Image (cartoon, rainbow, N blue to C red; front, top):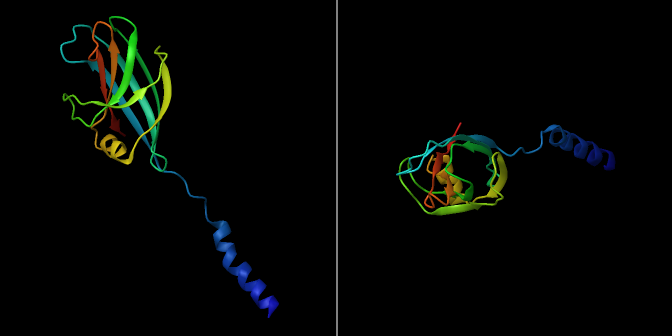
Amino acid sequence: MRRSLLFFSLLTAAPLAAMPPAVARTVQIVGHFVPGAGVTTKPAGTVTGTLNEKRNLVLFSMSWSGLSGPVMAAHFHGPAAPGQDAGVMVPIKGPYSSPLHGAVIMTPEQVAALRAGRVYINLHTSAYPDGEARAQLQIQ
């Protein structure tokens, strides 16, 4: 009886051991900086990143140029369609120098807005406190 039980245990455990571990689904994020509303400078730059959907974790890297001065603040904003404004969703920690790398945790609702293309990053300067450069984020 013990041999049968041992054999059965090994037989049922073998397929479980052969299964790959659960892998978090990740998707790529991209955005391109353009001037904010009423901005006369010509900011440029990109945002790239990865969304880990299991952890609601966004890893990002961004670079920029052409701003009127140093970045004073940066945030994820949303939900908003391209060209629309929205409040701050998640602040981005400084210091703010290009390139900037970071990570943020989002709520499930914020992740849904990100997946729908309704999140953007704003770079705020002293000349343009409402945002000098904006990058609408898209899932690749």
